[in-house]
Length: 428
Image 1 (tube, rainbow, N blue to C red):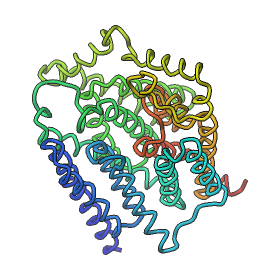
Image 2 (cartoon, rainbow, N blue to C red; image 1 turned 30 degrees about the vertical axis):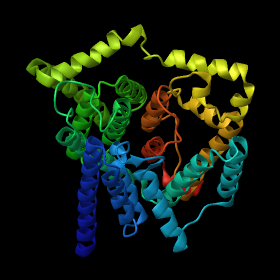
Image 3 (cartoon, rainbow, N blue to C red; image 1 turned 90 degrees about the vertical axis):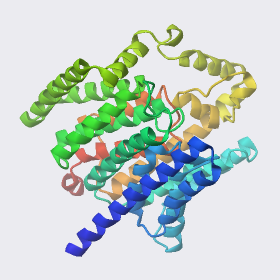
Image 4 (cartoon, rainbow, N blue to C red; image 1 turned 60 degrees about the vertical axis):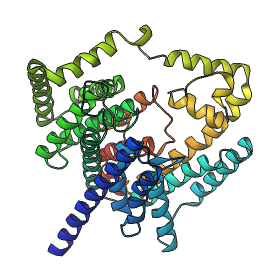
């Protein structure tokens, strides 16, 4: 027993150290413009997956999630490469299984994408299927409670570590007051990750999962970093997730849960006021975030997103082929940016028909995971708060087909599945 615990602890520490080296090298490579160093930073964690089991690679991906933009070269990110190595390794050891329905739907989707785009979207479609295969394998027959606490801690570690590395390595990381992010741009992405993780941590605290002291510490730090991003998406995730939790707390809650919520709100309010009173950098970040809400750029609270959406709607109306089949090159129609809306982006890429196939695939994956883990997902429950917040924020963000977004989606599923009663399901 002691050997097992020591081995797991040592392995986790090694993964933490390796992710630190990888993120540091990636940020340094970005700062000096070295493709060679960036490639090495990506290859290091990818090769380590040969020695790690599937669960450990899942935690490693969580650690590297916040720095994903830093560890991306061309069309490949470190996250998708870790998934690829893991799936290939498990496939060769014959420890990999995908149901016939999912396999058939996956083949239909890849074939559809190839025909519509004349092979142009084959790589993107293959990445989507690889992601789903990876999550199916890792999350089959797992203790969702234990894995959730470990994965949330891994992502929190990645956020804290990546933020510290960013301030150490990037020349503008620790000077002045600007929107905080890990790597170039990506302030909204980091803000969304902080917001969703904060809602997950709050749900876990109310459910009594893990150490309260440890989760409270993670929650405070994640909230602080999220505020530094000055991201309106961060605030939106907190507001929607918090409102959803409050709704079900008022409807049905235990005395302990009510106390946690009351003391939590009071503690955050007092801490926030104290930090504001101290002035300095934190005060400047708060003022900057309030300014972005009260006086948005060009007087548009959506930062121009609504205007972009209208451009896409115009293309769909004038060219129905793109609405139904996708494969829309937005630059060809004078649209400057991607839609920043999960539904519009997905339709632009795969059309209504392709999106229907993808929706079936995702639903089928979650249904099978619920069945094999003997759990169920309640959308009308407090534990669905992270998913509700994530889907709402994604309406002003990007498609769910990226690895980062899909990982957060599965974390939200694990959080929501905690309300299941396995004994009751077995009897039914």
